[in-house]
Length: 411
Image (cartoon, rainbow, N blue to C red):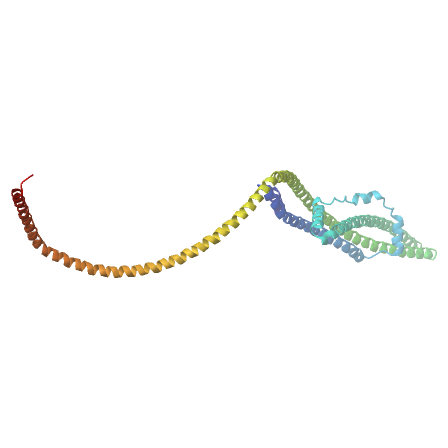
């Protein structure tokens, strides 16, 4: 029980950082707290069952002990009832116990069970029925205790009366013995017992009757003493059971107080959570109102954005058409590229052929250069001859000019 109380207090006193965390902790821990309360309720029922077992044992033991003692005859029991005074209600009140109120945690458990499952709606009725049964059992226990106490008092009265009867019988027996002794002495002194014979016979009969009554009283006293001893044993056992019952009731009261304290702490935390929930609900309502206002103010912008979207859609269609054209052009370019690649390959082939021709022509050029190198000395000699010829022709022209000037006179 202490462990469960500590766990409940720990669950109740833990706090979350945010409202969502607190709400999550509340919904997660509520079944755990309900489970603890159910455990408290089961402990409470176990104590009640122990109490029922003890009282049932007491009810079984008292009649068996009373039957084992033997019962009085009907006339004697009636006479004893007539002699015993009627008990007043005040002694019974002294034996009754005040019924303790039901624990708050028990009501909390019933309310939670009725909220959680439909099948538990019958639980309060059974609980109230069990409470009424406990009250009636308390009343029965009080009645049994009072009856046992009255029976002990009656047995003590009967024992005192029997003791008084025994004393009276002993006194009468002593008187009869003295009378008998005197009669016997007179008889011995006078020597004639004819006059005293009837008297002696009466005295002897009265003596025998008194002796029988004395023996009967002794037997009755022994029976009453045994009954009184058994009643004392029953009274001690009942006192022990009452002490045990008081201990159980103290445990029940302590359990009820702990459950009530846990219930109060849980209610406090629950009220705080409810206040925070109300606060966040108000904030949520304000945020929703603000959102609606922003939505109304943004409706024009939304219209503009929709118009922009329509324009963008048309432009997108144009772009799609242009894309189709570009794709067609790309296709044509790819075909042209393929044609160019074919032509490039042809050019490469032609270049290869030209390279071969080039190599051949280079060889020819080298041959020609070699021939030119070979012809250069000849050309140089020819150039020298040419220059000599030019000089010769120049000299010849001068000579011719001089001859002309001599042959043809000037005008």
